[in-house]
Image (cartoon, rainbow, N blue to C red; front, side, top):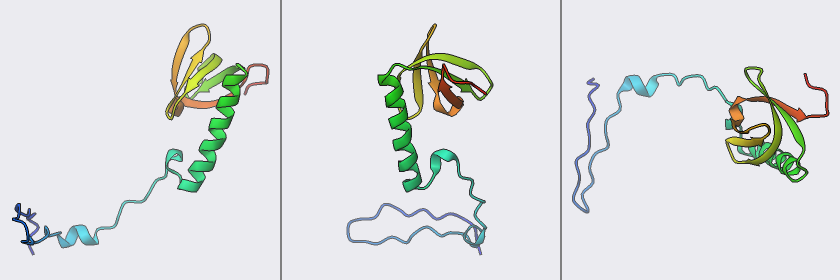
Length: 115
């Protein structure tokens, strides 16, 4: 059997064109093992996690809590969270810093004991 790809031509209204052929090799090929990133959890898990995250961040913004944000590389950023969106936090400390959420290892309030 040939493994060539057949592209359908643009058809006139009312005329059905054949669908492209799929090679037998690609149909029976095993799919790669799935790897789930934390950002791609099931919808109900994501919704509950996201709501808890939004509640916590909003509370820290409203009370202007001094925070310590520890990044994946070990660097610590101190300051108050000004705003956030789906992927970033803006922290006001000695300087204003935009931090990607994927770079955050953990965070805690400045008065608490860090790890």
